[in-house]
Length: 419
Image 1 (cartoon, rainbow, N blue to C red):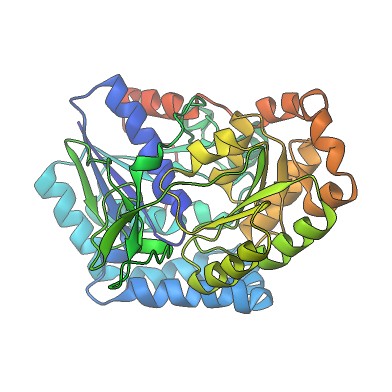
Image 2 (image 1 turned 180 degrees about the vertical axis):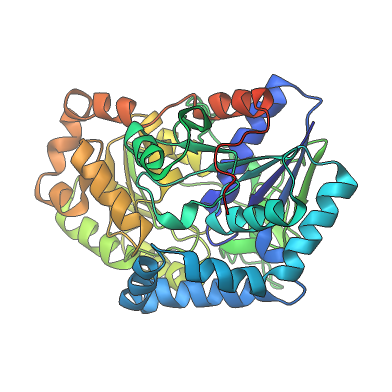
């Protein structure tokens, strides 16, 4: 068996979802061959940089424009036709790879990957390669749904019922939950982290690829093909090395805005320092270097309450040590917080999928808004009684194992083979 995971580097969550399932597959059967590929790297032209820059510009600088296109794509027939022409050469490369490497399963954790695979199966008239979509948001968007996808893994029964109404067969849609790690991580050791130092030997502590995770090793038999790279692998750096440790002022609130450090983190940090005096803050800015530098200046003014870091190799381990998690409502991040039963405070969502995740989780009683937390910060002391049960009903801590077993057990289907 050779399983190819297709994701897109428009955010860290899509790769993480694939990795969590890969871990479960490896435990289920170490002989399964697994490959990982970023679909944005399958083009003959440098589309990855262009797409990522455009995506970030729209989602952070022009949110109303992004929201308009997001809603417009709810009926994705036009986008489907245009993308089929635009990515024709990429789909041909994927076809060649499937044949040469005898790929038996293609598992997609991003909508664009599902588009590629749908076009591929139509082109090959192929019913032998099993295709599966892993939906990583709590409410459906039409952009995830394409013909000729054999199976879908969805986070909740409401979404399954929507797919059944659209024509998918019951046996081809399984409520698995969003992929997640096991809820018993090890805390990161201080000597696992190395930071870059400049030519005069002072620590720069910049985020992104200057952060090196020393003790990580690539998993045998796992193939990565992405210029973005696997977050926990060693990054090359032209700087020297200087050891430093995570200075977490426990108990602490984890504040994160995803891999790009979005969702008004600076305003959120100022507000928490001013209005929630009992809260120590551990703020993760991701690859947002400008934000990192500004908050580092604020850290110097609040050394007893504020710690600022850039990219963290294993956010789940940090999250497990936090007293409270404040984050934008990305599907993977909120799932990780919920399986840990952490007080989950949702920051302002980015337009599109996160707005739907925000509303879904608030309505389910699995999270509260940032404004509610600021108005009543002591609500976290009642979290277990008021919210933990709702979190356990919303997120499945065994989702990755369930998906892995389904991958191994599945056979080609005729669930949605129409044109």
